[in-house]
Image (cartoon, rainbow, N blue to C red; front, side, top):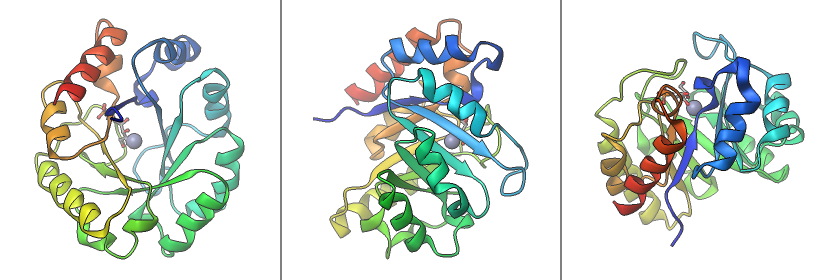
Length: 221
Ligand code: DX5
Ligand code: ZN
């Protein structure tokens, strides 16, 4: 059985010691790198851009999951592929022609993700779920690390799991925002396949063992 993946969010890393933190993730039980790209327009914050992603992928030796919180993401699909992205996630709320965007991502050889803001209803994915490799369920309002988990997420994960099963889709469910050892098991029991964790990992005294603990919790659930 495929394990539940743990994806540390580099947004919470120490940017002054980025290579050290990337290598910590390489050597840990984490499965993926989660990279947040924010443009200051779609979300009220700017994170980092292409040169920093390039520096990360130069050292990362696990799959790179890029979460675009930007308007008009179609402009950069090719660029993110060239920078070493394995999964590219766009926001439902930022795509006028979502179906076309998903095909364009896959045409570049990446898997395609769709992120949903906390207010966005699962039923809006009825007509695209079979084209989506991963749904990134935002469990905080996107834009910042370190926010508290929104409890309504459990219900949405259950609804999404039902939709995926009903449609016979192969979509992974990723949870992003406020993930800790307090909600990991419950999220997996509701249907989560990937847990993103930023502050909980990087603000802990021992990030390597925090990742290992999350992995144990997620995979015993
Ligand atoms: C929020 C980002 C998240 C963030 C998660 O907009 O999409 O990936 O880094 O950070 P924590 O785990 O601190 O909520
Ligand atoms: Zn994210």
